[in-house]
Image 1: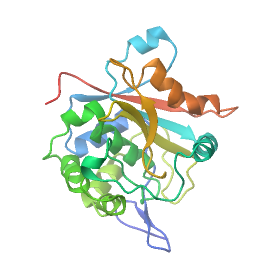
Image 2 (image 1 turned 90 degrees about the horizontal axis):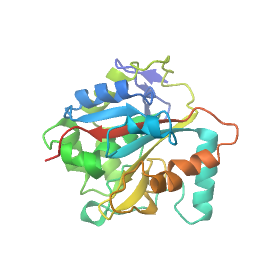
Image 3 (image 1 turned 90 degrees about the vertical axis):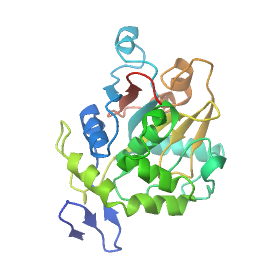
Image 4 (image 1 turned 135 degrees about the vertical axis):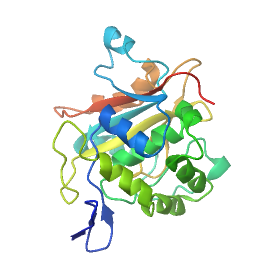
Length: 256
């Protein structure tokens, strides 16, 4: 296994693997700056999904949730999704452009699920109104949106600017970052609202977006119903597992 000057590893098969990101507002703020995003988009730790006092401290609306779950719980939820006919591990999803209620990226870079979750949270829902088409991420989204999933994933894979931005913040969390070559026991997932008013669960290792159903008028991704069919599914299957974390993606002012 080889490593480049940024700390990215390349396996025997040539696949590149990043250092995993921490689910941390500081990390995402730094990543946003590197990718040329507006400071109007803000990131907030959500310490409780049930305490009214703690939830009241989070700016609303919440445009997206970036959720980190232990791998064992992730596998339980995906097993239930498979049984319900909500996709598979293999890629059959084939939509692109105007056919999509959400913009979804397949993940082909190792340990980049945090980066893909971040992109999903900015490129969809209310946060997308703040995405400048001339920013680094805006240009990536503009190039990728019309493409089919495999070609779209290649846009992320070959982006030097995206790789540089990711690796520049990969060690900025509050915990010691694992090496790119080390196993990773967690999965990042994004929850966003689609153009059709539905709640979508987006994760680059699955078979496209997962439609979790219609959101009510005035609801955001932190509403009680969105939590019930989204993050709540993971928590109900947690058993004794710990290590969950949630970051909310919010905005200051109005998009345009």
